[in-house]
Length: 198
Image 1 (tube, rainbow, N blue to C red):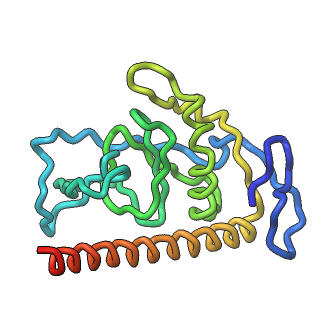
Image 2: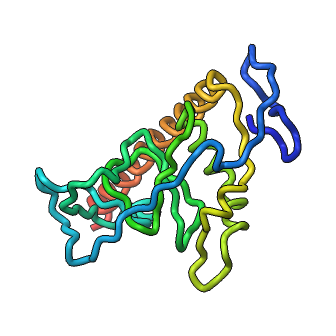
């Protein structure tokens, strides 16, 4: 569904799409907005009416970590249909579907033109290793905005973006559903084992 390096059309396509995909720099499609620095002592494990979810890297990489909340009245928020990316530690990890305030080691990808978020979420996730390869290789790997500016990405028509984005969203939803069923079966097995083999 995505072209091979150097090619302008994908090998596998939905019907009725024939035009070549444009290739451009990431900076032509997105600008970047850094997250917020919030000291640990100002973060809470309890949600209140006046607080917002505080999203950290660990929220993207672990399901065990409890959610954090902060008091925040600014406008540097992410909505569920917006993309953001990890800048330090695990550069290039792309996230979608969160709502709240992102930490300062994350940054929001703000579209400069009409895009389909699900398409670019899938594309940037697929490009994760390539993004990591252009990050600095210090003790704490990091990606600079100037490196991202020249990252080459594809830009099909908005109609094709929508079709591809919704296709992969359906697959992700099916995978999540199967994982929930699997977890339920594991818990059921565990309960039976405890009852049968005291």
